[in-house]
Amino acid sequence: MNATLAAHQASPVLDLDLDATFDAVSAAGERLGSLLEQHFGEERGAQLRLGIVEAMTNVVEHGCAGREGGHLHVLAVAGPSQWCFTLTDNGRPIPGDALRGADGSVFDFDPDVTAELPEGGMGLSLIQMVFDRVDYKVEATSNRLILTAFISA
Image 1 (cartoon, rainbow, N blue to C red):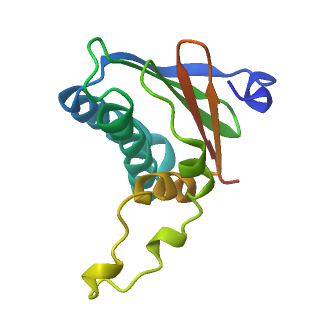
Image 2: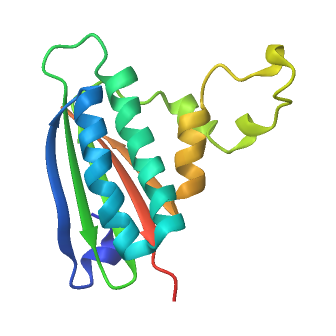
């Protein structure tokens, strides 16, 4: 949990244990949609949902692909000034160069020139653009992605 959020009276608003499958991601995305829209409004809620679903999809597609027993835990904690969404998985870590390259420059291409279409990195860049803060930690048996969204005053 983000230290700033921990300093306040934060409370869990969503706690999901999922198999790392696309079906589970889809069902979790549906649950997230109404929760986020209710607290952040339609537009911002949809953006946050897109970012979280993209992160969960990356776990399934890249981290846990081809592995038995892929698992994903999603915890959303709400505080008075921010929400933290922590995704913990038991898959392969995100390569460090992929995180460093997620600066949004991947979207700088001419969509009419197919040779210039990026081969990867769009999801991580999208996540960086949607959230106010993105932290990532690789631990002994798990990976933890912490996505923070500040609540506008």
